[in-house]
Image (cartoon, rainbow, N blue to C red; front, side, top):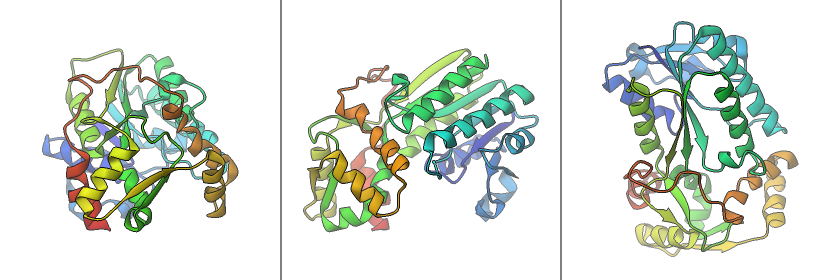
Length: 289
């Protein structure tokens, strides 16, 4: 079985590629720059240069592929949903042209809303488009990545986090490595078919107050979190150069928590993964601070 992986150096992809290699697969990795593929992976993967927003390139890169792990690349322009639309067009074109029979799509909790969740609306549109292809597809509805705290490294070091979300609202937090493990198992399992949704909730739902407390314990210094108005956060984003439409799309994702959203799939043995925030902080956040 030939398995392709997009964004192979992403938070999830870098783990997934190595898991597939250890399982005896030589994955096809789609990357915008061949030089970004780590040298130690060279003989174990088939590297193909392709932009995931360019249908012709994705089609060419996935000839003969049986299954693909698809990630819509992060928005880069002033119109995030247009970027997601281009990525959706690319994967649909590749699936239909190359008759790729299986897709595992990295989606997000909140995509089931379909509208009104900012950038997540782009993931929802990809889900709908893949469903219409009539292939076997699993949508991984992932929780909030632990690695998002890396983008807040300076705030963590200063001991002051900010969020627009209610401080006592619980949401699922998950390690990208655990998402990769779920994805690998699904890709290697030939017995499923049709359309599936697989939530990946991490080990427990956490509030921002609890997250700040865990950071305080593990860093051995006080870390606090405050809730600020959406407009204040929007102004901060724009001041650092983020286009207004992108700021709105990023902030729109927080409605998944602010509006009391309940995920389509409840927490269960199927959706719960093991890696804790405490262990991730010790292994990945602290060395990077």
